Length: 299
Image (cartoon, rainbow, N blue to C red; front, side, top):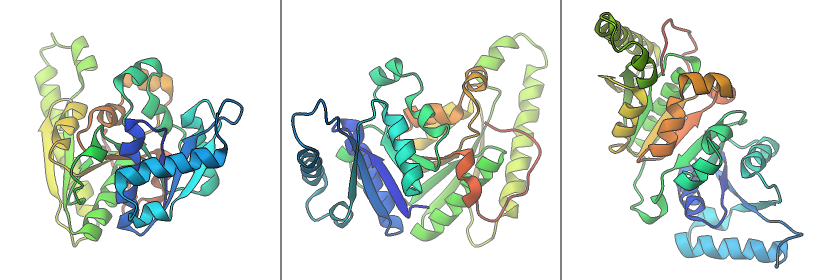
C-alpha cells in the first residue's frame, strides 16, 4: 500500500506534518517518496532549482540530513493555482499509492470549503492526513491501529488494510463502529416515541454486521471489536486520541449527497488526533480477501 508515496509541501506547518508522516509511511515498506511543492515561474524571484534547494534545506533542517528516505526523495514542482488538482494529477501520472497532506488550518477550510474532502473525491489513490503538530511531536511506531467500520466495500477494504498493517508492524488492531443516526437526522425525529427503538435496532444490527464481517477475514490476527452508541464521527474522533493511525473507507458521494448526509470521513480527517488513512472507492481494488457484500448500512 505504501510503495509510492506523494507528499504535498508548501512550506507551512501542514506541509511539514505531511512530510513527517510520509517518511514514516515510506519506512513501512521501504517505499519511494516524492515531494510536490508549488512553484510559479512567472512570479518567482528564484529559479526552479533554487526553489528546490530551499525546500530540501527546510525539510533537512526539520527531519535531519541523515534521513535516508528524504535523501532519496524525488521533488516535483507544479505551477497550479489549485494544489488539490496538482496532487491528484501528479498521483495519477506517477501511479502513486497514497497522497499525504497535512490537516488544513481552520481559516483555510473556511475559505476553501471541504479542502480535504475535495482531495479524496476523485483521487486515484488512498489519502493520508497528518494531524496538526505531528512534525513537532514524538515519533511513534504504528502499534495502535484503528479502523472506523462502515458496512460497505470501502469499509471492508479498510479492515483488510488494517489487518495487513497490524501484521506487518506487530501492532494491535481495533475496529470501531458508531451506532447512531447522526445529529442532523435525529433533530427531525427527536419527538418521535419510536426513536429509542430505532437506535437500539441500529446498535444491534451494527454489532451483528461487524461480527459477521470480521469472521470472514483470514485468521491469524485477533482484532478488538468495539461498537458504541452515538454519532459515528464523534466516536471516531474521540477514539483517535488513543491510536497511532486510523483507517477509513470513503464512499465518495457527490457534493449534493454529501451535503445532505454529512461525511464521517471528512469530519474525522479534520479533527483526528492521529494520522488518518482514507481509502476512496477507486482505491479499493487493493481490498484484501473479503469482497462479499453484506446488508445494512454504516457511516
